[in-house]
Length: 397
Image: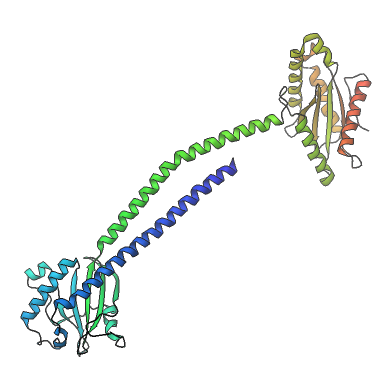
């Protein structure tokens, strides 16, 4: 049963482990999938920015006064409209001026900024430029292929602030005249964490439902195993038990004798063997009937169990003949046990109306004898006790 329980626990543990690993993998896979989807959206937005600006805008955006306020207003309007259509947070362009400072040359604006006239204007200093954006200006060896064609996007690592969680992209672009500028797109991805949180909750609920569903199965399986174990124990017990007396049968006694004799031969652990035969038992069957004879046998088996230790092996050898294997004992101790049995039988009121007595042969193994010879020697001692008048014990010499 223990082995089956371990197998069941291992199967459940393996299933839970697989589900856990799959859930972890699915979490990061879903996160990567969402980020990849966002990156495509960012890329598409960045690619669209040059199309809402004048073609030569960044060839002319070389000083603070080179772009008119009217054009700047139009750029803000166009980028804001594009920003709202694409669902991004901010669209903007940046240049690295000759004073080694970064300036915003165009930008979308929030509705609140437009309303309060706080939108980002042309040539606004941009000291908060990310390291990714700054590095994009340093890679001047990058082949930008052809003017106004995007070659390689750079993605800003995800960052969070009090307004939310953001993902950004920067795209270096070269104008027909060779001027370099960068397009930046910011996107609020707070909802990604919300989706992942919902997925995690759904996974935990799935785990809970799985456990709720599997618990009855585990209980049912355990009950089946317990029933099978009980059946096995019953069958196993029946296979080694004498059905009449409830003590060990001949099959069990044979196995125990082999085990004890082997232990004696290999480890020199001695034991005593007592063979007992009820005297004139046939007379009881003939006079009182076989049912009464069966009752006598069961009562005598009970006396044997009461007079022996738990470590002793008591069994029915056949008919009215019984055996006791007396471990860690010698002839003297075995003789004391035999005397105890004689006395217990005489003091048993249930059996004394039959004047029941018992003859006993006993002995201890010797190295020069096989198990079969040893059993035969004890058996001969038993029959010698009968020849000498019964109701006595004879030791193997």
